[in-house]
Length: 316
Image (cartoon, rainbow, N blue to C red; front, top):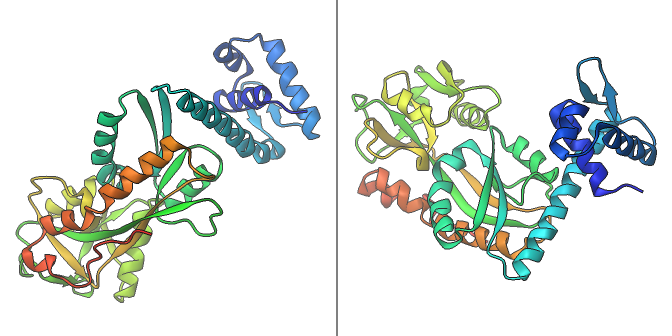
């Protein structure tokens, strides 16, 4: 019969790559740790770890078991957290996972308000470059709630948050388009672009938007850092397609709507029915997300505010 302690031992050995280091972190003897890992291997019917001369790595069976072990440990921690909350304890921890652009734009004001209301609750933030990585992490039990694009074929609860608007960041001298006007993406087909590194979900989004406009964007530079894209565009390296909510205050470039509009839906999702703490965070997130269209309007002219195809509320 497998136990949570055995799962904890397995995960710690894999994460550290060493029985010795894992035993130190877990405050157990190495023989006791090895015994429990062997007991787990016997229970599941095969070796989970390959003992190399200088390291330890999971076997194919170990890689298959590992996500379930992590999920079981995360569920156990959520159970303890829910029990503490039911007992009226103010302390706790909320594990939050998202993609880079969301952690830059949408989350900071939410986390600031959350911290003021729940100072005893710690936030553990996990960030991912791609929505597929985010979904996989959430499925593996690495977070209480994920914030990103709605995942396909997700069996758990999903709370729609709205629609995220994308804008074009351009250098200040690029005044070929009037303030408030939409810039046709096809008109930028001959430009070199500020692109995103392979593996970043925004690279896929930019390629898809440009493909729909009939061209493939040439990269002047590719950045790993989402926050760097508008700054590189303002510096003259090329246009950048960025979420409107990551454009920094005092941005010294130009901000224009692309034509046609580029948007993506956002959602918060969990593996199971959220506990009260997670549900409260998602509710705050949904309230703050309603302000996204106002933020976009603040970046652009009054004529952009009146654009009929800018989503104002996309919540379920």
